[in-house]
Image 1 (cartoon, rainbow, N blue to C red):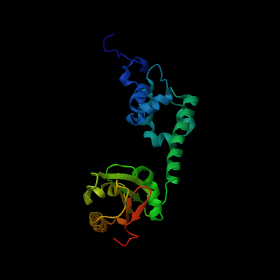
Image 2: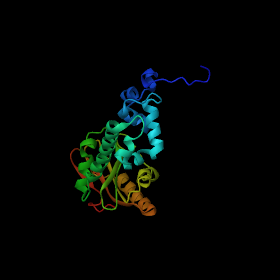
Image 3: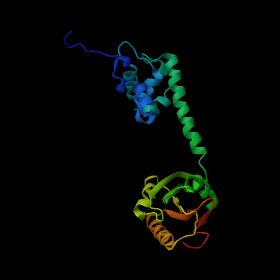
Image 4: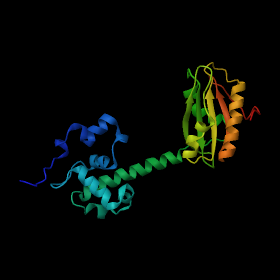
Length: 231
């Protein structure tokens, strides 16, 4: 009939638009909140696909945070949800919360140069180019992140202080430990390493982000420039 809306189920949509197929092809991080919820819901109603129902839920409850906070009984009352799907949604959201909490509680703490070296030694000791990394720490020296700042040549790690602190500023780090490797396996600091370290310390003072150390990783060994008194 003229003006009547033509509706499709998710199965009738092109493959590249179906949430489950998109997850299999591109990974879960490529999907929207609604698409992820649609996979959990699996089915919709006679009036709405699972994806449309997911979009309705996000709008009705104010996003994922609202869905997490709403009562199970309230969620179950929504047409197309019911108790079984409400339980599935609540279980999935709680698993997400527990995953985040587990990651937060398992963050390593750096209390010595050796602690910092252990975080990166297995990855950096065999690299065939110099990589400069930044270990970002909060005010209690818990690790926020380990990021690659630059990749250099066989004998030099090319970095500008501006780039070195970019992620530290973005993630509101209180302190940072810089680490780079020597592909030769010998972690002895070069004059360029010492000069870069002093530049980084000065830049950190300006930004209010303390540079706790600069480590050089060799083949199973490391040097702390702070312990060497080269700051």
